[in-house]
Length: 194
Image (cartoon, rainbow, N blue to C red; front, side, top):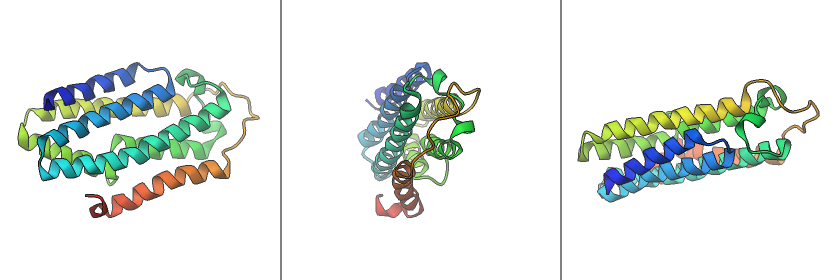
């Protein structure tokens, strides 16, 4: 069942690479992360369970922040198709910063809680069977690929919007801050959740 969970994570990641809809991409990203969580829970080791708990909490904040950013993009473009939402870095530079930080958290860059969770899960799975590192590595490589593709598709390139697009409102900045600030605090003190 562990190999099936990892295979499911890889298939969900590959599905993410094919998505043209922003919210679908984020949703399939959640499925792939939960494949890692399922594999870690099945092992029933302390590191696996701690990693699963850490990744579930971290992914909850990260995925929710990505959905909020997708909604912010949708409110201004009235579409969720990746190609039609490009060029936001020229119009909404602060939104680009939020997208970058949130995507880096989704990739599990150190010292985020996502990284801690994935590292614990990787260690537990490697101790169970060293060849699982191949599947984990492939899953993480594809995660990085679609996360960077999502960022570049929504932020870079020539914009399809007019220059009269509304800037991000304070409530939107507050909403993203309320997702990322607790995640950053938990990342600095992971023993609160592990």
